[in-house]
Image (cartoon, rainbow, N blue to C red):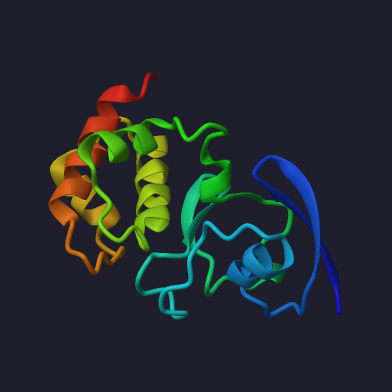
Length: 154
């Protein structure tokens, strides 16, 4: 079984896994980073979203062998104290109901705002489109992304 040297949340980590093992399971099972959730296993719901060099990707369908030297950021690494502008906005708007999808939602929103600090409503809708919230808090999610955009300084 190969050993992978991964850069996760700014730290060098090592994981032994088959090359086709999804990054999600390496994060959760090998490295104990359980904030990233399993939702569907086919990259359709967004619960497993992490950043790969700042780009939102679905970790359930990304084999660990494809990560290479790219930097992975999970919800645990978004901010040390949970004070990223998106996390602050999520709390202020009280987005979460059950909370299961929220790590993926937050990571998708943070990637969007990392590229464009003042997105339009349509850009927010397009970016967040692939993330499913079974509780239906889409209006609050949108509101929180807008609020977070006012908190980002660039």
